[in-house]
Each structure stands twice: as C-alpha cells, then as structure tokens.
Image (tube, rainbow, N blue to C red):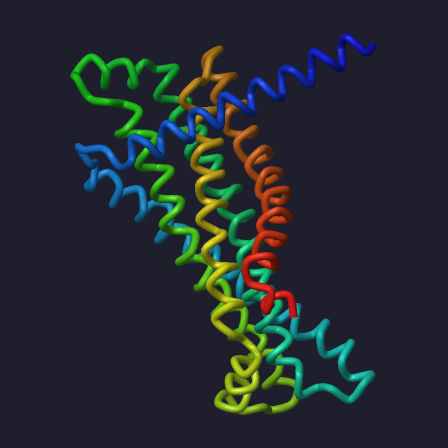
Length: 261
C-alpha cells in the first residue's frame, strides 16, 4: 500500500515537473524571434472574441444573483445603500477573475487539448516539422500567449457586465438610477483592488494554455488519447487555478496590504 502511494506521488510530481518545464520553455521561446504574430492574432481572436458571449452571459447572471443575495443579507441591517459597492468589490477582487478563469478552462482548455491532440495523432505536427516549421513555437507558444492576453480583458468584461447585472436587479426592485448605482459601486473600488486581481488572471491564462497544450501536444493512443487530453485539460487546469488562486491572493495581501482591508 505504501509502495503504491509512493509510486502515485512520484508520478504526480513527475507530471508536474514536466508541465513546468514545458511552460518555462514556452515562455523562453516567446521572447525569441521569429514571432508568429499572425497565428497569435488568430488565437487571441479564438480565445477572446469567441468566448465573449459566454463571459457576458455569465457576468450578467452572476451580477443579478449576487445582488439578490447581497440585498437579502444587508436588508436586515438597513444597509441597502452598500449593495452596489459590495457587489463591485466582490466581483473585482475575487468573483470575476476566478469565474472567468474557470469558464475559460472549460471552453478554451478543452478546445486546445482536443485540437493539438488531434493534430498529434493525425501526424499534422510531424508534417509541420517536416516543412521546417517550429511546431512548438507555432502551435504551443501562440496559444499560451493568447490565453495570457485574453484572460485580463475578459475578466474586465466579466466585472463590468456583473455590475450591469447588479444594476438591472437593483433598478427593478428599488428603481435606483443608473448614475446613482454606478457612483455607489465605484466609490469603494480602488486601483489596488482592480490591478492585482486582474493581473493574476495572466497566471490563470498561463496555466490553462500550458496544461492544455502539454496534454494535447504529448497525446498518445489515437482518438482515445484525444478525448482523454480534452477532459484532463479542463479538470487539471481548473484544479490548478483554484489552488493557485489561494497562493496569489495571499501574495496580493502581502504586496498590497491595503487590498486586505
């Protein structure tokens, strides 16, 4: 039993090390010419623009739900005026970045894992190498950078649409004006709330792109391996995002003590 557990731990550590080396290699290659700007632009479009409807719909729904729950709690203390500010702080500091990361892990992670896995088992990656194209830089680096670029933008969209959703819920219940709601919402939000929380999504993007690309790029066992790569990309990226978020929040409080207030 102990030997079996030891083997499993060793396998997990070995996989983690391989993914880490894979990601470091991608970052190193990202700053070396030639730069695949056309493919990078296409991937940013695929990751960012095509994910926009999902992010907007989720942001509006989360904003409405958070507003209703916040009202149910603050009404007991006669603090309804704090609902916009509390909602905005919750979205900007934690809910927006984390939900965006998890949604993108599901949509983009599965897509990258399946796409690269299919290219591996159908020998398209080998064909690229045969034509003197650096498949790692062309396929992997561009996807990781696209995730790192798109996540902060989509997080900002999530935050804004969430606040809009909160406004819609609040104006239906109390008739609060647009101007008053946003004045109260942004009266409590500082740059130290927005900047660290949004920048940490670049780490989420790196995790999503690296894990999905690694699993797809190293796929084996044919079409079964493609499905496995797609599923594992979502699960492992989501778990790593949740765990990493705890560490990043602690680091944020250490670097920006005022953000803990």
